[in-house]
Length: 552
Ligand code: ACM
Image (tube, rainbow, N blue to C red):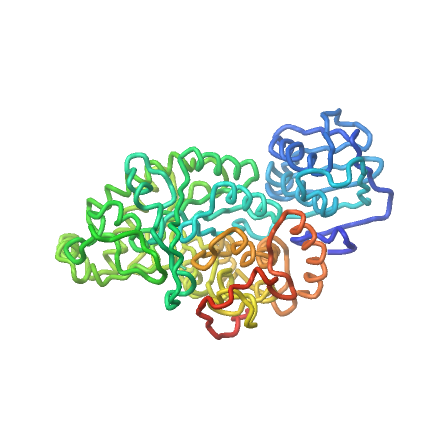
């Protein structure tokens, strides 16, 4: 990157910037917008978001309007690539290889316009905007640039999810991995099984802090998305070129579903009828019974899920995440029903039983034109060929999966679990996991160096995971997610050198401009100087882990 100066420091960094060497362009209420065929999502976004921020109507105008804004597609560029050219004699032109490229170009234009462009209404009405002459050529490094939001442990109301989609778009992230179900809550309406939300979407009380903490919040916690809420979220994401990948976590992490429908659990081992939605944290032994009845139930769930998350809503919309993580097998070992099933299927052990369970849904999804993705435990006991893997327990699973020909999303907990604390200091709220600073995330390398070029092509990309056990509201989610998500976005988008050679000081300098954008967006990020007084949680027990980041 060359010659980008404050206040237009771009995050994520683009591939190449030229200028300014000539006069730029003045954006005024008279500036017109011409949108070529296929650029409608960006046209709508400019009029609904950028225009109102600056008080500019961006009225339709001819392609050759002097000083006008033009959007066009040039199929010789890669689909997500774009060129943004600003020059007095030509106006502002955003050319994308596809509709997504044009949209990412518009996100860059917004950054060039200063922090006010990130507000919802003009704070300096009547002010015009000078954009210096520039040509920016840009394209993403990785295809899957994601954020996983856990809305199960703490529910994020719909408006919060839409807001996160806007925040993702501003960082050129394009996959929301939507963790919709877990032991502590079921968050998606399934019409044929109403108890999933009637019973499964709320809990009477909640552990405050790590499970060893003595504190409880006795306020009931709950909420779910109706099917129309889900349709709205998916459509809002698609307008922003973001694919939403729903996660229905099976066969572990299922106590909320079992509380709603006790026959789903191992009722010959535990009294599943007395189970409630879990109110504390950790790995839960109450897993689904590995029966044909359970398969039929979840086929019913997934039929509705497929309808709500259509395969054509985005490049990664065919994917459905079925979890597969942390399924404790103790109940399967103790259950006559499970053992009988194991015997009937001629399986060697409980790992093979999980593999059977996952394999069933892989075939079921494949038969419907969809693709299964799961946490890396789904590799155990053998994985069906078309399935993809979210590598969370480190690099090794991702390497194994890529070598076995599976697509992989790299999200190792040692590096990009944003519930982990950002600093070793005593003021960090509810300190969980490793110290992973902004710099650690900036030096995260998502593509394992040991892979061959062919195996590397299996790495779809990367995502940060936001688990919300200790994030009870939007402010806590913001604090853990930002500014580190900006670093993850740059890792995923920009063509950075090897971790040790990355210019973190330069990133920090650009972040000065970016913090002003986050301020304008109302993001409660962790300030570089540490938490503000109200961002602390004195007296709430966490579970810090020591260990250096595995810089690669
Ligand atoms: C996970 O963190 N259990 C995927």
